[in-house]
Length: 310
Ligand code: SF4
Ligand SMILES: [Zn+2]
Ligand SMILES: [Zn+2]
Image (tube, rainbow, N blue to C red):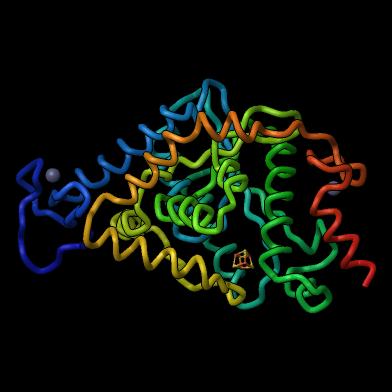
């Protein structure tokens, strides 16, 4: 996929100049037809997994990064006119100095522009420490604290905001990397956790409307719509194995366009087996915080107890 500049190639579907070459479909597309195509594929994913239902109040996990900004913009563009639906954006401020401030500001701006209710929850306020402080105090990797506590806070904040679904900005690249990574590591149980969840008390159903959209298309969508593109990486980001898988899929896709969809379709064919082999566990309530958990004490409380005891 590449943005076309400086010379005029016509759109495959109309007489306008193309702005992009879409490798997986072999088509040049103008701005309008590119955006239409993105909307078509988001609607396809939404319908396929029944992601949005009548009277839903959808919480959008808005980090302020390119994916979540595109997600919010796309959902509001596609479904904002529906009187039975409501949207609320939730931003988790983990407290990562020099990185999170900008994306929190972007989140404020975009929600105000799109007129979407915005809730900001911070690690400092809810956990007593920022992520930077946890990293200094504890002995776990930053992403362990961050991943567990962010998931915990997003679920809690969505539920308290009355949400029925929680939408995240995972795109086709994220999903296919996770699928292949789990295959390569032989972690089929973790792979099975990627399948759509069933409703359980206290747990807000997660949906991923961008799962059919390439990461590059997300970037293009933001550029064409003048949406912010915070491309800075988190200073704690260090995923060498995932980076290898990402590069492998990238090269494969360059040579054989459309293979990311093949990975996704293969995974989808296996969903019935995953459901059979790894039925989703019934959840209890954490004895400390009351959040849904498969154990007596949830992982977030365990991490927090451990770090406070140090
Ligand atoms: S890379 Fe940064 S934002 Fe992402 S999980 Fe790790 S610490 Fe959190
Ligand atoms: Zn066109
Ligand atoms: Zn707990």
